[in-house]
Structure formats: C-alpha cells, structure tokens
Image (cartoon, rainbow, N blue to C red; front, side):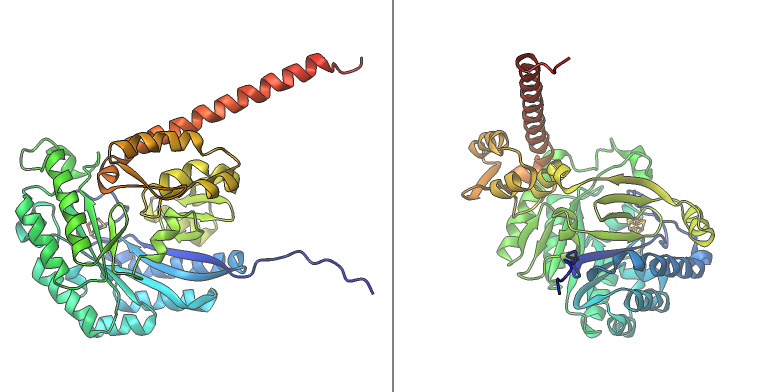
Length: 416
Ligand code: SF4
C-alpha cells in the first residue's frame, strides 16, 4: 500500500504571549504608554474581556508552544493578585504553556509590598518580576509624578525574595529632571545592592503629548552630554558587577536575559492582547486599538478591534533583522543575513567598517558585527546609514535586472 505524503506541521513553534494591563494609579509625567488612571471601575470587566479574547484566539496557536508570558502595562500589580490569577488561569487552560516558560509580571513598588501576594503570584505561575524603581532619589521620583518612594522599592524587592520569586528585574531611568551624575550613580549602586538578576536602564525620552513635553527646555534636565556620560558609566559599572549588557538598555546576570524581550529583537513570534498591544504571528504583524472602551466593546460584540494589520513574509524582514539585531550584543551576522534574505552583506559591512574605525562597531568573530557601548549611544545614526546602504544596493540590483530584461527583449523579441 502506498503511503500518502503528509504535510509537515511544526508542532512546537515557540510563542510569547503579551497581556497588556492598561491601568495605573496615576499618570507619570513622561509616560507615553497606553494606560489610564482612575479606571478601577472597569478592571473586572476588562479581565473578563481579556480572558474571552485569550480563549477565542487560542485556536490559532495550536502549532505553538508558549515559552514566555509577559504581563505588562500600565501597572499589572495595581490590577491585584486575584485578577492576575484569573488571567493566568485562562492562559494555562487554553494554551500549551511549556513547563519552564518564563512568566513575567510588571509591578510598581507601591502595589507590591506584601510577600504573601508575591507567593500567590508565584503559585499562579509568575516566576519573574519586573519592578519599576526608576530612581533611588525620592525628589527625582516626585519630579516625574511617580507614586512611590525608593524605600517602597526596597520593600517590594524584599517581598519578591520572601515570596520566593528568584528572578527580579529593576527598571531605572537616567536623564530625569534634577538628576546629577552623582545621584544617578547612587541610583545604580542602591539598585544593584538589591541584587536583581536583571536591570533595564533607559534614557528619559520626552515625548510630545506628555506633560513633561512642556518642560523639555528646563535647565534642570540633564543635557545630551551628561546623559551619554551617565549611560557609559552605568555600562561599565554594571559590567564590573557581573551584569552582561545584552541589548542597548538591558543587563543581566548570565542566564537571566529576558527571553520574552529577546523575541522582539530576534524576530520571534508573539501574540499581544489588550488595547494597544502588538503581535507578530504567522507572518502577520497586527495591533489592537489604543482605546480601552473600543477594545472592550469590540471583543464583547465581535467588532473590529485592529488598528494595524500587515502581512510581512520572512524574506521581507531584512530591515528589521538589521535594525533590531544592531540593538543587541549578539549583533548581526553575514551568513545569516545572506542566507535569509538572499542579499549581499558587503554594502552593510562597508558601513560597519567605517564605524569600526571610529570605535563604534566591532567584528566580534568573522562575519559577526555588533555596536560598542559608544556605538549604542548613536545607534540611530549608524542604523540609518546601514539601512541606506541596503536601500542603495536594492536599487542597483533592480536597475541591473531591468537592464537585463530590456536586453533580452531586444535580442529575443517575441514572435508576432
Ligand atoms: S506607572 Fe508606568 S505605565 Fe503607569 S503611568 Fe507611570 S510610566 Fe506609565
């Protein structure tokens, strides 16, 4: 009997889930994320709608195994343990979650003070907490409307340890109003003293539309030179403390790199849920509306909640590969690039060689390139030049193909 050839279905494609929690106690003056203060009355409805959305989407991910779950926001800890537990229950019930999945929840120090809450979260599946500390100086925290003190951050870190969650990440910001080099160094030292496995250090970006925008010319905001010094000092100090920089803003003890965030930088698949959440699944990049009410109504009534929806086949992800790869310490690789995108690496290499000579890029092994810390500081400018070189190469190839077709048409005209 002849056996019929079965199509090969990959059953265990890794998938990250992102659950957006769009609630905050109050709004920080620099915040551009989609989150609402004073919306507690809608929390219960949101949890039931998000659960329904998770349930309805699960059927599209049967070939996937979830290896990371990230509950971000907003302030997930502000949603409360009971609601987080309900959401995780829905995830575990409807998705194939790997036993060693990384399950992260973001928290703010003012809503994670009780170790019993941490223990309950751990029992529900959370094994990584990302805590928004931002500064060890209470004056700096107040200046941007953070609703907590550094003492509360210390208490929250202690609660994480007492509740036996062994993977703690702290977020810090440099460039805050009134911040000096000395106060930034204090922030890094005092955060490191809490012995987190992971640290994220972001430069303050003043986005249009945020309250801080009106103060963008204030003299107490650290200027670009000081921000650059703050960044370079922290890269060096954290390396001395045993944290490996694995992305522009991220540092980890060995083995504690954020697996979920790595998906974003390495073109992995992820499915986001909630208003404003983005997804990249099955070659389609899509996002949901940044509007809580529209999202609630859309899921409840089966309406359209998409704000973006674009099919991007793997071959067309060359720009992303370069842009995102150059943010990471692993960088980009000639053979991978040429194999995946059928394009020559030489024009890109020529740009990187130029930046190698100025100390901004380095070839870490034959064909593999990454930016140095000073290169990370000007990464946007370098990336623009790399992308431009690639664009020029594509134009040259299209022109060459058009010339070839023209010659063939002339030499072998179609028979009339
Ligand atoms: S806590 Fe985070 S998400 Fe909420 S307003 Fe502040 S920065 Fe934005």
